[in-house]
Length: 462
Image (cartoon, rainbow, N blue to C red; front, side, top):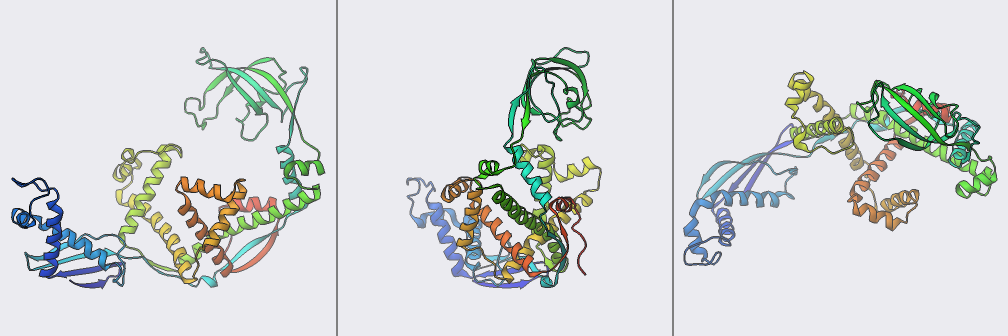
């Protein structure tokens, strides 16, 4: 067997295979023996006919199977010899076939994407410096107090107030209609919470334990339940119990109860350290978006067309899963409309829709392969020690022994996913250390929350 290759400009390779008589004979011999196992010939039990009789009986009818076997074995054999590796089995074309003499087959196969990184060590970024203030620590300790809060039952003469926790029973019906369901109940409902229905709690303030109040409430027009969105409903509300939330004193006892700290000052020091660490990491993660954007813009990529096609389809399928499944149930692939149908639904030309998904796919591929190229260039690998250390950190966060946590990941077949995530983090950490950084201002935790919620990452340092 002889082979020739020619590298193309689009991360593909022309491959030409030439086989002689000896190659064909071996392939046909293997194919005849494989067919012999199940072949039925009069006078012989299935699979027991002599091989020479099998050859006479089947003749050249096994040519396609023999040629396919020959190509499959050859590609497998060549996998370690080719300068540009094959990333998926190619589709071959038989250019010339002379039975029992020769075979010439050609294919165009995809090879690895080509990535030339820009001058990533010259990337310059501005970022804020984390400064934990006394106010930040006080605010965090307030959350601790709320976690350890106790419920004190209000006296029957006391009405419900903002911040109270109530157990309630209610009957609800559409205005002018009979109730469709029996009475509903809800416990540990906290009045005045930001996530409560807007304006709903105003109807509950002042109600005393055991009292029933009738009122109307109109649900927001964008309420998730379509059967209730924008509708005016009548409630008959009874508060079964009203609890006043009592926060513990901010003292050494609170520190001990919360996490075993020996004193309030020790707890404050822990809070400060954690805030400093967590928000420094959050700032870094946000700025990584900016860094990779600069890296990708300054790098060059060549992708096989099949990569773009497959990733585009992946992007489309994920989007439709989110839309149709609303982020919950997994929709069977056959129930997802084709991209042609989707183009009709949104009233846009098919090519425009395809290009939009292709752009997203290309950006994702650039981000992924720039990270992989960086790992190769900087010799970044995830050692077993690195992996075990990351696993140990996560296990302690969940309060589990390392071995038990790892077993749970093995059960869910998640070990390799976590390994990939740990490697990606190590690459990001390395890149962040390599770029030039300038700390332009100090920010408190309150300021950083606003900074981190802002989609803009800030200007690049020129």
